[in-house]
Length: 210
Length: 307
Image (tube, rainbow over all chains, first blue to last red; front, side, top):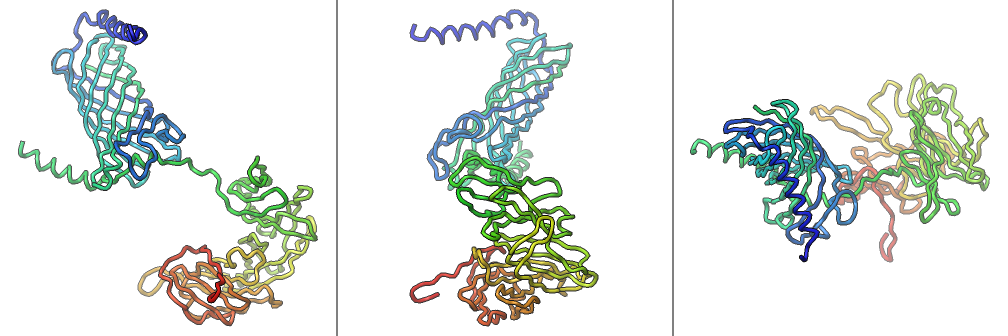
C-alpha cells in the first residue's frame, strides 16, 4: 500500500517478460551442444565513477552523468564492438565468452578505452523466432587512458537482449545492460584511488546459431 | 592442471609489467576541456580594448571580458605571422605581416588603424641585389627581421623604429642593421633567434643568434651557435660585434641587460654569462644547476645590497 506506483511498475515488467515467454516458448529452439555466435556494435553511456575512499586527487567520491560539470564523469558517450561465442549446456542455458573493445572520449578529447575479455553464462527464458537472452559476465579488462596509462583489472556485466531471427539461423537484436569495471591498483600508494566505473551499453547485434 | 600453471603465471607476470599504471579513473574525472584558443601574441591595449593574435588571426576584446571581434582572419597560405602595436604621429596602428609568399617577397606590412579601423599596406624597401626575401619575424616591439638572399650571400636585416608609411608605397624605419652571415650555398647555418631582453618594449640591445648544424667526427649530430650584438643606439648599419668566448658552444635561453653595458645571458644548459664590454661574453659566471627552455624569462632584480 505504501508504494502503489512501484507495485504497478513491477507488474508491468513481469507481464512484459512473461507474455512473450508464454507466446514463444512452446518449443525449445536450443539443445545441449547448440552454438551461437554474436557480433555487437553500438554505444556505451558512462553513468558513474565511484571512489571507495577519499583521496588526494579527487574532490568528490561519486561522479555521475556524462560530459562536463564538476561532478560528472567527464566522459562522453562512446562506441563499443564485441564478438561472442556461446555453447549450450542445457536447452536454455549457455556458457560462453566475449571479447570487446570500448572507447569513450573525455571532455579534453583524451581517449579512454576498455578491452573486456570475459566468461558469461546466459539464460534463455524465451527462445525460437524471438530470443530473450539474459547474461551475467565476469572476467578481466584492459583499461587505457591517453597514450601512457594502462591497467589490467576486473570486469563484470549484465546483459539483456531481444533477438529476432529473420531466418532459421540469422538473427538481429538489441541489447542493453550494465558494466561494472573496478580500478584495482597494484601499488599500496595508489590504492587510495581504487574506484568503480559504471557503464550502460546500448548495442545492436547480429547472431548466427546452429 | 599442472601444465596450465606455468603459462598462467607467465601471463600474470606479463600483465603486471605491461599495465600497472595507477589512478586512471581519477585522471578521467579530473579531465578538463581542451583549450581551443592558442595565443601567439598579446599585441597591446588601446583605450578599453585589448588586441591579441591567435592561431586564427587578430582579435580585439573589451578589457575585462566581452564579445570578441575578429579583425584579421587567417586563411590558407595567408596566415598572420607577426604583429605589433605601433604609433605613427600619435596615431596607433596594428602592424602585421602574413605568410603569403608574394607579400614575403615584397616585404609587405599591413597597417590596421585603431582610429578608423581601415587597413593599408606598405612594403619595406629592399636592395636591388635581393632575389628572395623572407620576413622571418615581426616582433611585438615593432622590430622586423628579414632574411634576404642575393646571388652570393644570405643577409639578415633588422628594421627598427617605424616612423611612417605611404599606403601602397613604402614603410620608413629609422634604423636598419644588417649582417651577411654565409654564402648562399651554406645550408647548414640558419637563424636561431633574435633575443631581446624579456618584456623590454623599447629595445636597447638584442642578440642575433645563428645556429650551424654540423656532424662531429664522433658521429654525433650537433649544433654550434654564433651570436652578434645588435645595439639599437648604434648608427652603424653593419653589425660587427661578433660575440666571442665559449658561449658559442651553448644555446642561449634568455638575455637581460642589467645596466647600459652589462649583458647577462643564460644558456639552455644552465650557464650564466656576463658581458661587461657589451660585445664579448668572456666567461661563464657560474653554473646555475638548472636547464632552461630556449625562450626562458630572465629579469634583472635590484636589491638593497646586490643586483
